[in-house]
Image (cartoon, rainbow over all chains, first blue to last red; front, side, top):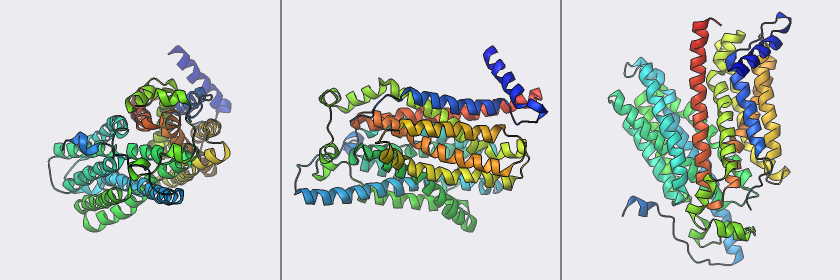
Length: 52
Length: 412
């Protein structure tokens, strides 16, 4: 949980840079995180060859 | 005759005819198989989406309220998720012509029954039965792909098959909507049922269980594919092939990847319009137009996904999965993190998102798992990925709702 909080705070710091009102909230991070994790999972089977 | 004997695979006939005659029969049967997979599975969608275009008339007529429609909708969702797994394993052991036809017949009959007035609980039960019957279509199609197409062309036809849901959506939102608007919701269900019946007739007449059931050599023999001796010995029975699927870590990783990509797919499809309205200040019409770009490019991505991987990457999906996976993440960052109302940025995000989700929906949602599964266990591979994907979609909705509540309470 602590790690997750830090990531969230870091994202807020980055995306609120210059005081801009960036549309970042928990759910945006959840969606982007899901997309990124999906990519990582797909990469784990990089070397698995299709069956003959 | 028992249910099991009815669904038993069609018996293999002795191989007959010259090479030319076999080629002619193969070509015709494969054309019919593709037609059935796209058109009939498109008609499955008409019976699945019928309720979506009738919600307002149902509420306006005082027959059902929005809360009842909520739980009625969820019965289909859960029955479909469970059914996709169970039916995936069953389809490997069945005559797929009968499997495809019976699923759509039950679904059409459920729609027909829903045209009559009944208590909400019975409505929900029938809609749940419809959900289970709906889950018989995809395994019957994917098992057909494994039986009729070789490994080098499977991706191309898988991509073409995946566009059937766009066909089903178009038929629902144009024809079923027209019936509902002109004749009322009862006829909307009857219309969907008639479309379903048409699909049953087409599947029964044109779909064939396997090349061997038509007196043709198997696809592996016909296309000259060489099966390594170890693999041939390892999975002689369907049960052994299915066990190999369950023991294959790669199938589970693909299932997890698919579940996660369904999170982002349903995030944009279900909440994209709301997000644009609430966070970026678009009107409802503007937000809907931007999100619709995603649907158009999704169709494009799905259709070409298999062709691209078959023609340019020799049937390997890893490189295109990496490219389109990155594209998906970049698209979501553009959509969610760029502040304010910049229509072109949001449209560009939807172009990238739609294209990438179209490709990944095809690859991670089944094709990659079918690629690594034994030919006689394609349905099982689809079943494992299918249930994981719908769990992902379900979790997406729960997390979104929880976050909404936390946001409202905490005044974030």
